[in-house]
Image (cartoon, rainbow, N blue to C red):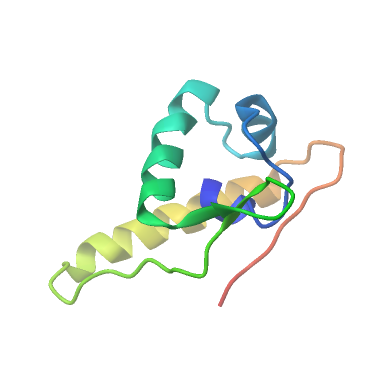
Length: 99
């Protein structure tokens, strides 16, 4: 979720801004570890303006990962997406879908 939203917002290192852009919100302290990991794996990079963006690298499961794990993960993602669509903040929402 965090990595995907980097395509839609200008984020440098202010984790409070990121927390406000996410649903459900993730406390800033819990966001730092994934960023460190993604940076080291090359999954996020800074653009020419210094904003963090997803790199061209993608994440895929191995052939040996059980289908049930992937299914449960996808169901959780769909449940969160439904909650985000149903919750109206009164402000502008940025909702996108990848197929």
